[in-house]
Each structure stands twice: as structure tokens, then as C-alpha cells.
Length: 329
Image (tube, rainbow, N blue to C red; front, side, top):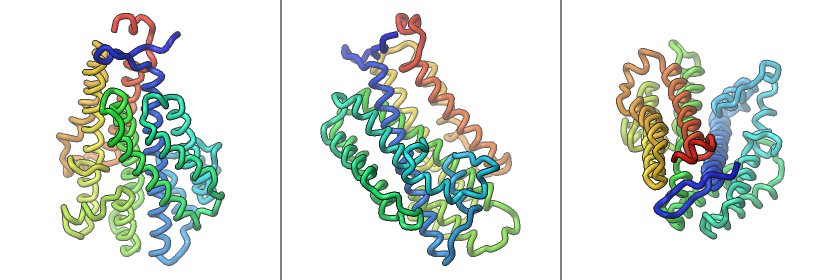
């Protein structure tokens, strides 16, 4: 079946182009998030003055949304190492950068030359990087974060904010909403317990969670420096204006999807817009005391389920669809 053209004010965008832009953005967001989480964990190790064992690394891996088989639980540090340079691991940083660059290569005519040059530089930098031990990877991780941030800035500054840019936004913020949901859920499962032993270490872990979302300074401005689990949950889940909160990501995702529907002019856009709107409403009307009383983990699981629905509906509407639906659109 030939790729479907998505109509846009007299122009067309092939579904394969939308697909590549969407996944390019998701893979870059994934690489940056993974680099940030691992880098913060390495910094926490220095603050604790000791090396983390496999239990700590297992939690880090799970916080990235990666399930660890029971037989591999004793080798979590090796799994963390594979998240840096292992191209055969689809969740690794290098694999994500390679896949982002490949998707960008397929749509070079749709992105700016500055975008391509920056992503190409990042690609060659990670390919040249040595497979250092995870303990010595801080410079590598910092370069990934800075390279991804630079690409996002170049994208926003040099690309027309039309349909293609909106697919990039949709990919970025869907990936971010899912990543932060998994991160917060894993952290609260581990550390939000009554009479938690080792209060100083737990305090550092809560600070680490905020730093994993680049949120420590913003949190302190909103709530002062007093660290409370419920306030952290409220900030990272429900804050409407912080770029790494789930609520902010859901609103940005809904806006991108509405703009795609408006430009594409497809009658089938209503379904994906409705699903994205439900995700945003779940967060917009959420109250932290009700969420905590009902179970934060269950709430985050529901958010992840809705994110999956948004992804499926987006694909069914614009990328993967029956030929009959394409003729009717």
C-alpha cells in the first residue's frame, strides 16, 4: 500500500514523513532522559560516598520503564552499562541516537540543514565514544544532554512551525509524559513508605528524583526547600507550567495533535483529539490528595495506559490505516 498523503492547506505530507519526524523526536527525548537519570544516579553515589549495588541499579533501570527478568536481577549494573553504548539494546542511549539520526536521514528534505548537521554531529560523537564503564561516563552523559537540548533549540528556531513540527512536538511530549510517569512511579514504590529507614539517604533520593526531572530549583521556588513526597508528586505530576511535569506534557501533546488535525483536515482526527483531551483532563482536574488516597501508582498506570491509547490513535489516524479510511479522509 502506498503511503497516505496527509492534506495540509493544499500541500501534502506523506505518512512515512510524519512517522519519521515523530520517532526522530521520541528517540532523542528518550536518549536525553536516559542520560539525565543515569547521570543523576552517579552523582548521588558520590554524595552517599559509596558505590551502589545491583539493587540500586535495578531500581534505576526500572525507573526508565524497563522490566528486568528475575534471572537478571543480580546483574542490574551490567544492564545499566548496556544502556550507554550497546547498539543491540534498543533502549540504550547510542541506539536511540542512531535511530533518531536514521529517521532524520529519511526526511532530510523536511527538516532544516542546521537540524541535520547538529544531529549528525551528535551521532558521530556517540559512535566515536569509547565503551567506558558506567562510573566514568559522566562526560559522555553530559554531552548527550547538551546535544539533545541544542537540537531542540535549533528545531524550534529554524523549522517552520507547521504540520511536521507538530509531529515532532507530539513525539517529544508523549515520550516525556510516559518517561516521567514511569520514573515517578518507580521512585514512590521504593521510597514512599512509612517509617522509612535511613532518613538521610531517603532525603537524597527525593532530591535525586527532582533533579532527574530538572525540577529541583523550580520546586524550591514553588514550595521552598522543604522536601515532602506529596508535594514532589504534585509538582511533577500536576504542575501546569513546568516543562517536565506530566500535566505540561499532556497539554503540549494535545495542542500538537489539534494543530495536526486542523492542518490535515481529516474527519478522522476527532478520535485522536478526544483521547488526547481525556489524558489532559485527567491531569487538569486531578487533586493530589485524592490521587494519593486512591493510590499514586494506580493513577500513573492509568496515565501510561492513556498515553498508549494516544499513540495508537495517532498511528491509526495518520500513519497506519486501512486504505478505505484513506479514501474517505
